[in-house]
Length: 454
Ligand SMILES: *Cc1c(COP(=O)(O)O)cnc(C)c1O
Image (cartoon, rainbow, N blue to C red; front, side, top):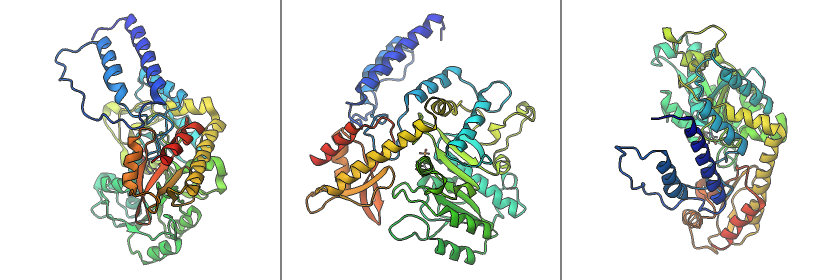
């Protein structure tokens, strides 16, 4: 590789061109790409060099990307990358800091400040400390590790050191996210090794009486409760005041997966649906969802940082630093780490609480507009009243001779919208989640027109 100062300018010019080209077409390209086959290129024995590569990306890669960064990608819970965070993410790469521990740059202090600011944004006590992760899945995995260490501590076992052979623990949950179940497997508990607590009528939230019954019956030495705020389909919130009171009574650990549901706090404050989350032992948040920073970025917070550190402690002579260093490598999965906090920090600096809140409000408003239209339409049935940013619906079988899945395929093939399936009370449904900062009135109307023409 040859380097010359002119190369910087060439790269910046190319970046600027690619950026403009992508954004110019974002509103009009098919929301989900239809060309999914591999690009016909052979392994490059001799590289083609930058200029040709840049050309190749523009002609062969760009046109076949999805518009997941645009306003009508309503599958999963997909946040777009806001402009400031996009810029900050480029700088992360330019700076290329390794935030494994403090001591050599301001980056780790900024990560700490950003974590404290997220507590401030969501009105969580500053006793919550943590680390940036690749997403909510990795945060849920850290939650499983920390809860495991807690159970061990109750039983005189340092699980990180001795393993979990003698650990006696029961886990309770009602509608855990798939990534939480995956994390229980990764952490050695086992994906199926948790007790399902029944849900409240017409909701995915935990039935408190059923939880207490299970806790009374439970003879395990340690108990872990995994709560949701909110569930990914019904956007239902567990009653965290009641659950945290039971955790106190039965000496149980409380983890709350609040990946996107925490943002409801910006609208309703501490007395809304997340009331009581401040009593959790640990919390999972996602920033690449509703904070609209680029992939990938999640956060794990806990009031028991020492348990997290005991789970992830890494010691080697060449890694020792001063006591004041922030030991990020001992608080998570990675040793070497990207300066992942920076786009979050930049987003908060540039938009502030109010800017973030406006974005959430707009998505909720658009979800409501869409839900109201569905409710009135002959062709579709609104399955559940929309309370946040997720809309659940299905085709009206009296008018449309299509299953939900066939409907999704047809709608996605239109290129106008991207939707994903869900399941409500055992029935397949269509799920729309609005979490992109750029979704406009016009986007909502375009989706409505597409549904109307199905
Ligand atoms: C999206 C989501 C996850 C997984 O998040 P990733 O960022 O995709 O790893 C976990 N929990 C909930 C509630 C979610 O919505």
